[in-house]
Image (cartoon, rainbow, N blue to C red; front, side, top):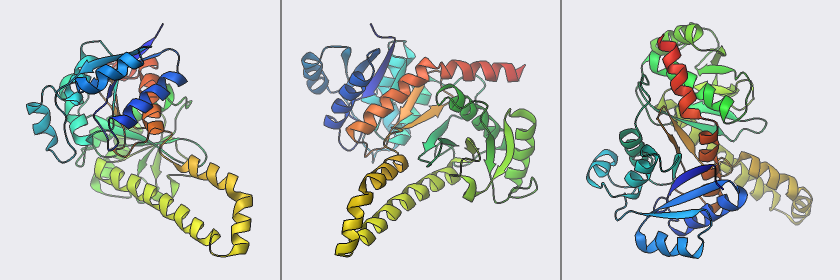
Length: 332
């Protein structure tokens, strides 16, 4: 008996459909109370479900949206795409959440249009869990809103704080505004105004965070605009990849170092795993009436499984409902 159903875009991602299908099976093996609806071409999802019928269902979609298509236009014109059909399943109550490793822009457009924004939410925001070495750090927004107003940042902070608490299990999350200094008077006019509003309206707000604070564990949630957040995220991911590559080159340079590398290999593998975004699986689009997780286009089967699991945690934690309740309470 399943307690939560997640719709999964079988056509989304560089390795679709095979990687997505394998990831769905992994998610089902990991969670005996989970059910999955695979959304994609009938000739793909139908036979696969017949081979693996336990807690797995199919929903046919005759169209797909490519990474190179204009997101909003594709969502409007391809009404039978896997993204639109999957979001429709959430809207109509046939699934509690949706996962896709397809086009981020198209997924955002489909989810916003067909799942719908929570009343009172000005802009949905993408939140991601950074692969920090010591504790999860939530960064929001990481790409949904390049241009923001101070009041948007307040809502991002409120939503990301609820996500950290309800889904990640962080008690009383410490929330900060990404800035170029700790003082309230630092930064742009936007940052200064947002600081004042967050200090007044965001429970758990503890001040500004600088770039050097992001991965230290000093803060649990860090809030910024989508442009800055996206650059920050990709810089961290690129730096981690470059560091591991340089470390590998250094350890393989001589015979003596290769012997030493064999000794420390287990620790290095654990370090690499802890810095990998694969275990997170994807980023929630906060502010919608249902749960939506956006995965990397290059997601492996493991990343897909983790993304589906994260969608299930959002549903079980009643994330959209709690955000809606918080927004209604703030509105008075």
